[in-house]
Image (cartoon, rainbow, N blue to C red; front, side):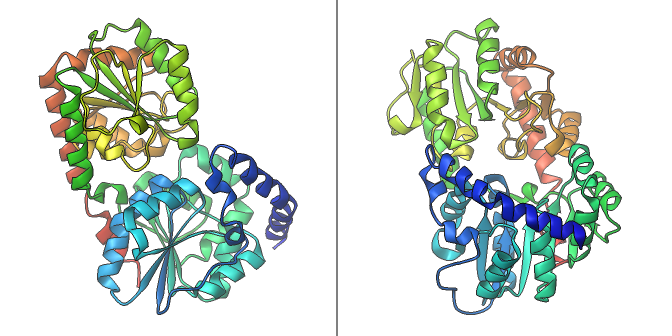
Length: 417
């Protein structure tokens, strides 16, 4: 109890700073300045009838939750779905995926009064947390309200385990309140058990059960026609600092003179920053926001800047190969599953702890190449752009890799009411 009391006190002390953070983030993303009451457990009218709650912190988790949402609708057709996030981009993604068919809201900050307000307002029959969202007051509050709460698609890296071990007396009892835990893999399960003596199952990674949107695939194919016959590669989900590394390596690489780079930063608040970086490098840039996708891309354009939301699948559908960001710097890599599912050859940098199992298996199959720095990545980009047979083989292995890991949603559903 003393650990939880200290944790709660820290939250109260930090609350003004949390709202100051939201206000400052709002300078670049005005949506951060909206719906602040929800952060404190106050919401508009609740939808009528029984309700199931899923929490997916941001964009990746929200997309991963899509097949689970569909499966829960099929199992509980009379129930309404509440989907919560912590970020505006996650909230926007939920709206893009589900429209008004689900209720979208922010999860409150982990303060006892805010948690009680959230649970009393929505009264979920049960709740699902995606991946590794461990909020002690929320978990204990759900247990006190006798609301079963499950942790699905759980993953825990060695780095995260070291951090959680420092607060094991806070996190361990919270994990023990969960009605069920489904881990992505055996390594994740072992690390979770090292953190707390919990019962869990290994059900696989739900992200393998993604459904590719045919409209986005058709959009990407349309873009590809507008690119012409030139070779095209993507740098997707790039993080701050990675664009500079890639552009430095690109200046040294022996790529075809007409090669087009499709650059898609991970976070929308960085779109203008990356555009300015490209301008500083003297590169000829076309922004997606200024292109309707109906006209051919001029031969002199060197970079298409993907400054749009919800179109990542279309970008992958339009390119010959893709580098996935968050991997050149020690950030753990973003999902390699979606490009593999589309048969796109994948390149990443040295950091991959967020998708360690997927990277290891995809590499073993030949669907993915992992290299130690940006120069080595660009060497492979040049090689693969010149070798369509190698690209085809990697793409086929990528599709096979995703196909053999499907079924995680059905296995996870076995844990739920």
